[in-house]
Amino acid sequence: RTFLERIEQPNLLNLDRLQPDVIEKLSEWRKQGVRLVLATMRRYPERLKVQLDSLGLTEVLDYVVVCENRSKEVGKAQRVKSAIPDLRPEHCLWVGDTEVDVDAARALGCQVWAVTTGERTMSYLASLSPDFLSPGLQFVDLEHSR
Image 1: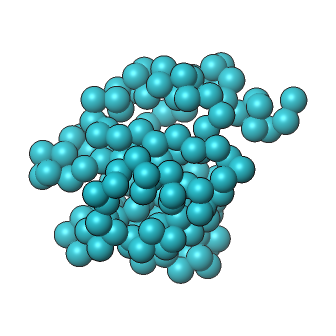
Image 2: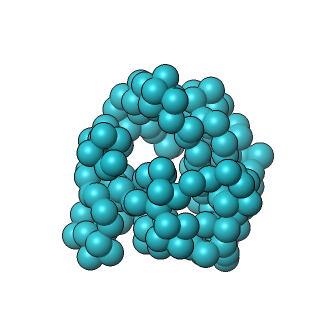
């Protein structure tokens, strides 16, 4: 099996853990009127739904946008735009942990805050020149990004 086939197996998805205080942070943003969108490249949307439910994320997200891995950054950006037609990039902050996220945000015209919570290192993400960079979601400051 390839990496992409293995990574979404239920036994591996069950190993994922949330960063500290993520639910609280996302809930706080929603109370402030922030629309929360998860844009992810997955092969099995039904497994994603189970995972989001088990992690308690379903109730704090407004949209879940799934796109194919092969669509890369332009496809990811286009999928978000088509799922949310009233999206105003000048009022958006894209938070992500890969080069695809940085490039998708740029394709949409959004500011991007890179976080080092995935496989990418701080130095690698810094080399992509995101607007902001931090070690985790808990450090994202919406006021600072405006």
